[in-house]
Image 1 (cartoon, rainbow, N blue to C red):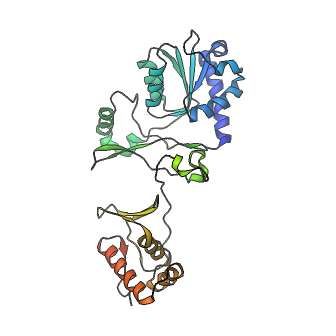
Image 2 (image 1 turned 90 degrees about the horizontal axis):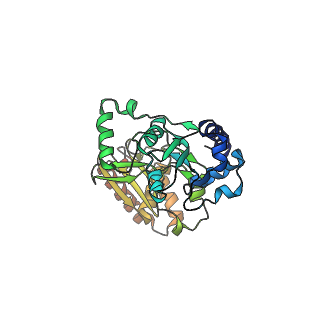
Image 3 (image 1 turned 90 degrees about the vertical axis):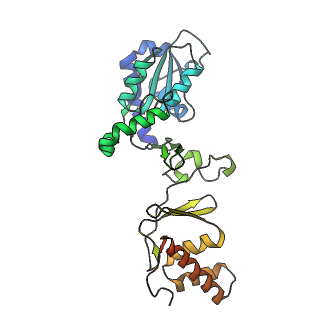
Amino acid sequence: MGYEQVEKDCETLAETLSQRVGTELLSSADFLGIPRGGLIVLGMLSYALNLPHGQFEPPASGDAPLVVVDDCALTGSRFRRFLQHHPDREVIFAPLYAHPELCATIEREEPRVTACVNAQDLHDYAPEELGEDHSEWQAQWHQRHSDERYWIGRTEHLCFPWGEADTATWNPKRKQVEQGLSVVPPEHRLKNRPGVDSSQREPSASVQVQPAPTGPIRPSPAVLFGQVGNHTIVANPEADVCIELGGTAAAMWHALVEHGTIGDTMGALRQAYSVGETTLRADLVDFAKQLAVHDLLHVPDGSFA
């Protein structure tokens, strides 16, 4: 969603809130945004509702309802933590995007939450994607997060100009929940924009577009690869192989992928490294053979001639 779409949906959220809880109650309520995306949405919503400054500076406790704003709610875990830090207030939850079952569950399980109102409904793709395995999948996630999540589903992946909604995936080998990959380039996210001190960024890996092969030597069909930090990760899930390449090994990989032949790859590498042709060729051929053995590189017969 771009800013224009978010602004439009904030107008919708303002109208829905007014219809659901009434303008009189909203005029006396206090407003808080869940950091950090909720703060941005709250700023836009404040213009749509024409809120005075005083409603953004709520006291720690009080009799007025507390309207809690967020950019999205996928499981409700972040909102649950927020409730724990504000135990004595009547609350209206206003996520910009949420699944209707999540909102219904929050209203049912939290007596202090008098309304959960969102601007746009998210769709749950889990039943159609998982089929007969859906119930078991849902039960497993409930077991892992029995006291954290109000609802388990698989909705659209949300990307805002300021960042992406967090996702989680289950690693069956490590038997633990891990953060999902980012899919939006850093230049399109305020959270990880270029120029920000990398030491201040949250460590993450981004899905990267795989280049089209240009020659007979190419990654094997099932191979995925990308840059993670200062290293290149190359993996073949079908062969259960994953390696980390750095330095000259990473340079060889990217040159082979880009040029597709030993000759063209050597020409590119010789411009970057001061090494004799015989040595470079021997190292490159050995490197390509090792990757081929592990089903990471497709090397047709005669490629080394």
